[in-house]
Picture 1 (spheres, rainbow over the protein chains, first blue to last red):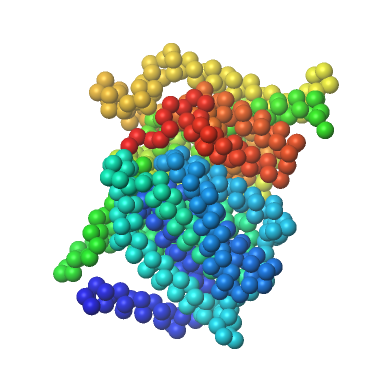
Picture 2 (spheres, chains in turn green, red):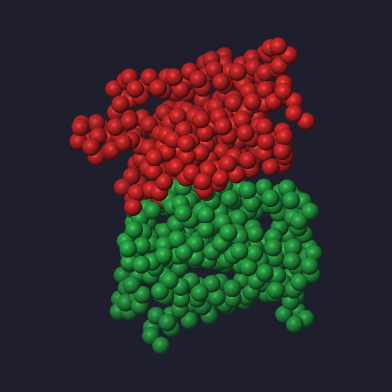
Amino acid sequence: MNRRAALVVVLAVACALVPFFVHSQYILQVTDTALIYAIVVIGLGILLGFAGQMSLAQAAFFGIGAYSSAIASTTLGLSPWIAIPFGVLVSVAIGAAVGYPCLRLSGHYLALATIGFGIIVQLVFINARSLTNGPDGINSIPPPHLGSIALDTYQSYFYVAYGALLFSIYVAWRIKRSRIGRAFEAIRENEIAAQAMGINTTNYKVLAFVLASGFGGLAGGLIAHMTRFISPDSYSFDQSVIFLVMLVIGGSATIAGAVTGAILLTFLPEVLRPLKDSYIMVYGAAVVVMVIFMPEGIVGLVRRLIPSTESTPPAPLRATTPSSIADSA
Amino acid sequence: MFDLSATLQLIVSGLAMGAIYALVALGFILIYNAVGVVNFAQGDFVMFPSFIAVSFILPSVIVFGAVMHWQLPIVAVYLLVLVLMAGFGLLFNRIAYYPLRDRGWLPVVISTIGVSIFLRNLAQIVWGSQPIVFPGPFHVETLTVGGLHFRTQDLLILGVSGLLIAFQYVLFERTTLGKQMRATAQDRATAQLLGIRVDRIVAITFIYSVLLGTIAGLLVSPIFTVTKEMGGLISLKAFAASIVGGFGSIPGAILGGLLIGVVENLGGYYISSDYKDAIAFVILIGVLLLRPSGFFGERVSEKA
């Protein structure tokens, strides 16, 4: 085991101890939410950071996962352990159905098509009352059980969310280092060149979109069984924008960037809470400042400040600036 | 079910709403053509000036929780707001765009999103979260012509938008400034070589776009109420309008806006009022799938 792998294991174990040291229910709730958001943002990172395609519908897939899982566990009475994967399936299926036509477009056009899709999905959540209970949302969503123990505290749910996050990181990491990941990167850097090298760019772009929907759906199911109440306002266009901001601020081309951005920007409003009413305003200003002064996101900044000493990263971690994404878009 | 007079009235009010979408869409397109970036704060340039204006139009208004009496004549208010927002457009250009101008579109998009979040919440802090009623400039609400009732504000919107579009046509086709703006939009490097100060032209384009949003806000506020969210849906539909018309095309944005305004008004009445807000996006997705370049667009995908 090399040093880097050892470091990752130590870090993973250290993070698993968080619930033993944090006793505030409130902070644990924010922590669990941050872990779940990190999964959504990893999905978006596969699409934008790996494959260079922009989506502003990530909150819609987050919502589709949440609603599917909530409906499956309340009206159909399925166990959350089955309902959550069911939500992922629904999200993936819709992602594929939407992705095929939409990914003939790219850049701004794709972003716009996804905005339209996201808004329609939210309107369905609000208006399809027989299925979604309309603006009131769905309550009494059951928590998952482990044997006879209900995982209904933020402490216990931490491990559900954390396990899912580690799983997501692992899957994203495997994708990045696989043939698929290299195809994504080729498409991001230059779509026409990728096509010339025999990559079926449409299929790969749809695959990236479907993967993003899948991660979004997984996170949606997780949030539904944590908060046990869902309503349409959590899955708005604004939420999609927040996920995008998390990714770009973290550093869009790396998994670490996605996770860091999600966790940091989930905590940022909580840290700013003492500012009372003005905290979201400061948050907005902070976003502008961060994007101006950290061109490669937080991860890029950290990498610049701490030059790697002996262990060189195993993957060719070519820091991709957002502008190279734009050039290929 | 079909009712001719209702339909005619819906078409007129739809055209008025469509004109608002068209003005906001023009704001999007001018910035997009100049710098290749979609400005996500465009809707907030509809909302924010409306709050400023209403603070000076009402006899008393609550600002930072204190009651203020700032009432001014309505024409003075409109001028004041336009001047303030012009300054604001310049500031926006300097802060959110200028430092990022060489870094591709994504960072600029994110920074305009940051500005949008900032403005919405600034509005909430200053004016609170209660919707504010914006009194229109007319004392008469409706005008009856041959048994048909038209809202006076709708007619004002159509008149002002028409004038503005005519003004813009003259600006772009007949003046040096307009030609410089078009040259910069078409090819920045060449424009610079020809001695056009492109950074200044871009700044002017930002100011003009912000003013288009401002005018749209002043015109539409009497129909709705002034809230921090008011710009959100308007700007997204304007976005849809600009795609439907063909992104980057000025006549396309105008026609796209009018089309969406009319179709959603009719659809909301005859099909489903619950899904009225979805209609613009259904049209958008339909157009993207069938004819991605829109009515007037040239190229489908962006440059490789």
